[in-house]
Length: 197
Image 1 (tube, rainbow, N blue to C red):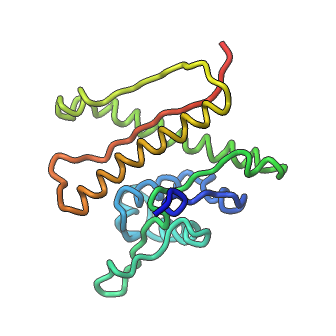
Image 2: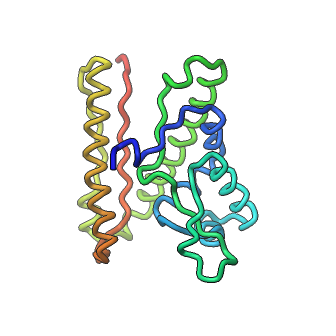
């Protein structure tokens, strides 16, 4: 399986607009973590009505971000869903440069993603004392400031992506083998962007 098979690159502006709604980002993340779930399961996780969750799931499905997972249904009454691409989705600003509203939509989605990432980290900080010491000692927050050109930044992003994919594959393989003892979902958030001091 190639890297492209596992990640869905968004180049359609209407598809990108799906993620301007913060609940859809939360639902997508919850489904990504669960691997498969029903609207009822997801509604419990995001504390929203099942009908609202179902509506937003259908919107994501209409653009191919999620698909039904009928193999998990036992009675055919509840729809099971899963992420359509194993690695989630990616997008690049260059794919929207030629459209006037592209930059605005891209900024809105990126800000929504940033807000949900910050929310997740703040939740961890609030709950940090409840985690065992081995987890708090292993947790990290890092900032590096290398002096790079644009091509080097792109290369670094690709190398980090490959590294994170190896670790993600390792976790999925362990889960598939039934090795879940002592494992938790881990959020790794690093950003790479130019700045001027």
